[in-house]
Length: 42
Image (cartoon, rainbow, N blue to C red; front, side):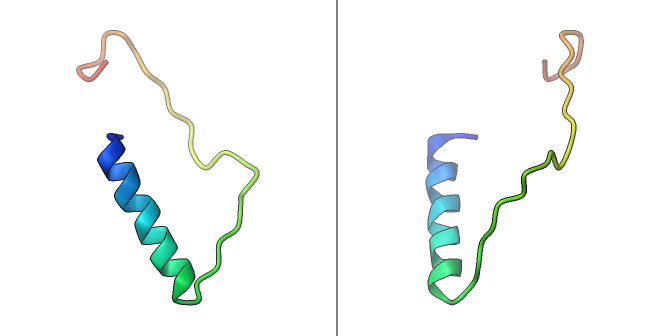
């Protein structure tokens, strides 16, 4: 994720919280990600 996108995401979450939304942490993995050297993106 590029720095600019991270900044926009942060501002979006601040707006959600300012408008009365709530946030909480989840202390478990939501997905498993594997990276292979032979993959096209790898």
